Figure 1: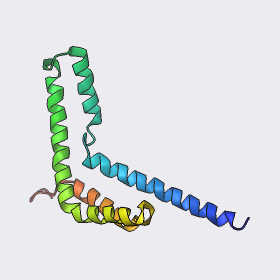
Figure 2: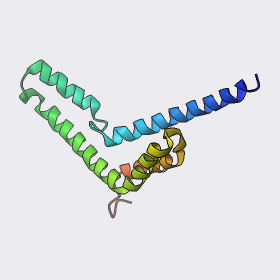
Figure 3: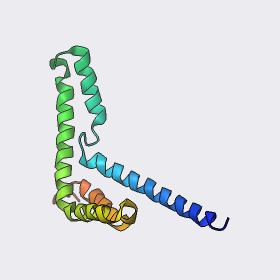
Figure 4: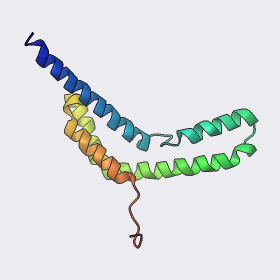
Amino acid sequence: QKDARPHTMASSFDDARRERHARELEEMTLLLRFPFGCGPLVDSHRRCMEAHRDWRPCDALRDTLDTCVEAGERRRFRILGACSRWKRLYAACVLHAGELDCDESLLRFHRCVLESAEPPETAGTR
């Protein structure tokens, strides 16, 4: 029984790490992959097009969707420019060591993504 208990604790620890990794990766995915958090607008536009079969009634919704996606594309460009080093280091770690052995590189990549997600403040906004 003594052997089973440490294994159970290790399994719980690994499960918690996997859950944390999954949350961090999902959070980054929302910022970096289409539809960039604009999913509800994508769905609304799709439903509008299905209902009307014509683009004109959905034009304003499409403009709103385009604005959201363009902001997401700018954010992705900014993030990838600022975080490319951490992304490469994380990817290399996963390839060579496996996902669970890459806590530090994922943490640095995740932190960089979150810090870079907000647009830089312009002069005079403070």
